[in-house]
Image (cartoon, rainbow, N blue to C red; front, top):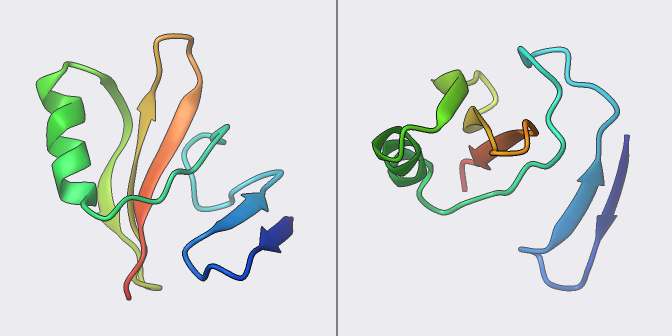
Length: 80
């Protein structure tokens, strides 16, 4: 894994070669302010949910969705 950050604490890029806690490896992991809203929107649009909305012991809350090209996207929010 590699992580690059900037002087802005809200900006970071993390490259992950695998996620042992994930049902599938994702190609990108956008962090959102309202993961519950994003999950509801994905369901409303009929997107394929690969992994349901889950809160992990570390406080991360996330779900996985498959985009139209078949890529898995890990949509996440982190406890502040």
